[in-house]
Image (cartoon, rainbow, N blue to C red):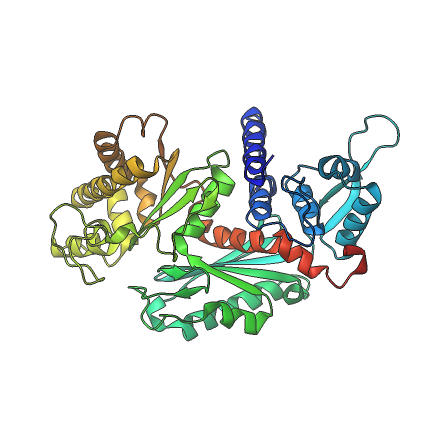
Length: 447
């Protein structure tokens, strides 16, 4: 069986488990680990130092053993031996090294199949903190997660991204240090990785923003270096809609492998999950739908073009239209408030914005054929009006086969989606087998 076939088999098995467990409340840790750890494993090719012939079973290195444990595929030493074909002595070496380095615990007993009950292996969440940072146009949310993906604490504060990277990232640094120190004082020592989402195009391989329209002064700024120099851990940076899409798929739509996440706020963007993984394109600009032209519209856009979706349906554009009507609307939150108060012009504009978004989305649905479209962002707070317009356009203009099982739903994660998704991005890096193997290279028992 090839590596790709094995991946699909694992994912299909987990989807069946999820479907059969409809009466079970799935924890954050379970939902993230069952897919995120499998994806972390399969996203990295097997090391040539450890792999054998093509089609060799997974679990040859300590990092791959951890992936099996974290995903729930094998949670005892005997199960690992059966899954991998490794000798029990080799399995013990791998497991003992992971325990010694604090990656796993072996403390609770698994169900016995006869004889002495085996001891259960589990990911060690204590002393492994992950930071998830969601930077928006006018806010910053910093969250701390444990290595399983459970959100421990989050703090949001207003800021203006136009103040530039030094001011904004300095604020993030101070907030993160405060959250880390708020525990037992060992917080900074337990930090393992940092994930960051920013509201602009990002070259994912370097973590640097590229010509972000609403982020003056951020072009090619080395955001990863800023955090790595101050905290001594790896920092991963991505577009905010990508990390939000990751959070929704991992936590709320676990059984969905093809998903689009639309963020409709001050601007408009789209995160793409294909086969359970974020699709970024060749350089990281995939999903930038806010600058797709809508019909023959001519509204000027801040990107320099005209007729862009963002210039027609984005929160900034709607607020400007409401001000022209004499209504008090500085930003997206004001629009939401007007809609909730029943203002007819605000309701009409949000519904029309939904239709414009749906017009663009219908093309994406025909092209990508997702199972689920999730609509989030500030304007999703009035999703009854927004989604009515989106659904109207999508179901009218899309291919019937593409919409046969399509769901268009509001965000289930809500305001923490950015911080949680950025944290998951960092977790998948921290749990990647190659990363774990590197951490164990100084231990002779891991060789």
